[in-house]
Image (tube, rainbow, N blue to C red; front, side, top):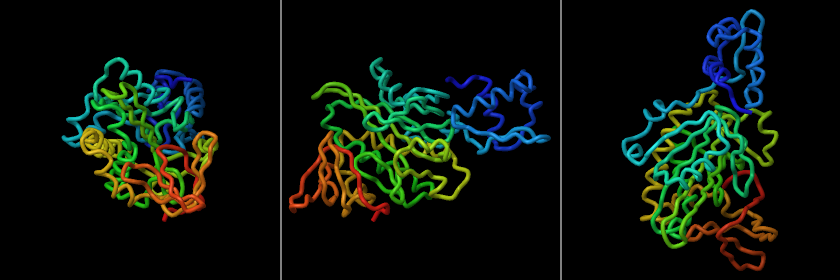
Length: 332
């Protein structure tokens, strides 16, 4: 289902979280009051609920800050801005990553940035769906072209995690950790995820699409389909209003330079900082690779960004990929 132009106009009017009369909405949209009611009910499809009170009108159950290009650009530094070739905001898209992968195949340049208000098929790791209610969170992807092949950008997702935490700290959001290889955690619960998709030559030029999904506010009804412990920034901070445009700009300020310099500095420039945010070291964990399982105590990451697990026999094994399930909900 696509969000209609009328629904977008209604959302723009109701974004302040205040009551607006049916008459006011009908006049603004040039439709009948009954049509307003119908359009509002359709918003439930996008994870948006509203209240209707006789004599007051309609309001969203939670105010929204819709993404605006000019407001994001206001928060973008000159350094990051120089690295951005285009910035698009989509009301609705299947997946920001999928969109930029297609753009990369059509010769889109490095620095192409895509945000979405709503994803119909948001992508997590291993093909999982990323729950993406309208106008509530950050769904973004960045396209960057590298010259030396995929091997030269090994560990990029770890560096991206470090950049995300730097951005959150700038907004006085602390108690954030990283879970190898691609997850952003807080208090043992998933706050966000990173998905890097690489295509191109094995030894030559390649294109990477770096996706980030970050929970700012997820309604309980929307979270029913999430099959793991989760959290969002509203729960972590206790703040009911989170400034999405400013946060989007801050994320770009930290992400763009890290991506642009990664081919020359590699993971080594970010290892110590990543390790300081690691929420797995010292924990009993199970690593899943396909149908195989490897149990042991996580011993952090090596200098190439690979996971170290001490097995029950005392040996330490190194893993380049996999899915980690760990015991205990509180990061150390």
